[in-house]
Length: 242
Image (cartoon, rainbow, N blue to C red):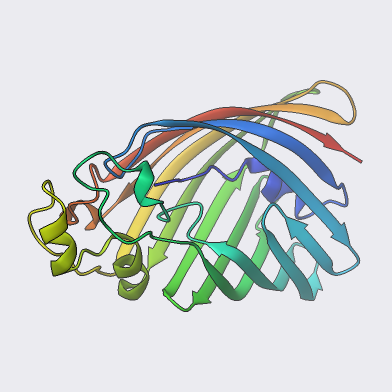
């Protein structure tokens, strides 16, 4: 299971005009019965007029006013940052299941600025295998001309159909896996997390970000595919703005 940190500067840049490219290395503990992973992830944010592309999501702002933006959002890789997993990544005894693939999702997104320190993002997405929503709030503290601290909180909601697709277990899968003892039907699930990012401005265009966080979920440990109900992650990224 991949819970990839969306760095604080992505939220900040929703209210700026800077385009960004970069790369981040992310370590995360698995929620599935799988090994911990260390992966390199691209950082991309491009805006042109009312259109934007942020990592693997694309959107169009159809309503804007100071500190408030609403957009149509599409995500061709729904599930990638949370529950999608290939069965080959699971440990022995859990691998004879169907792949829990990503899905195309579409919905609405909201970027908002509550005050000079507090910035947020929310979205609700629908797909063939269910729906999910999220809200993230970050605060921005300038500790130095070149150092910014961004603590944040996040909340997610996943409907039962979404969870059943990704961590549900059929009776047939129980018979094929020695370590899976019972079937499971996904339930409506919520999660909450805390995170922090420290950004170092190396030059006017180049920044380094160090980030870490933890996210906790309800219900998911009832599925035999899931090892624990919380996930710790962290990493470092470099980005160039232009």
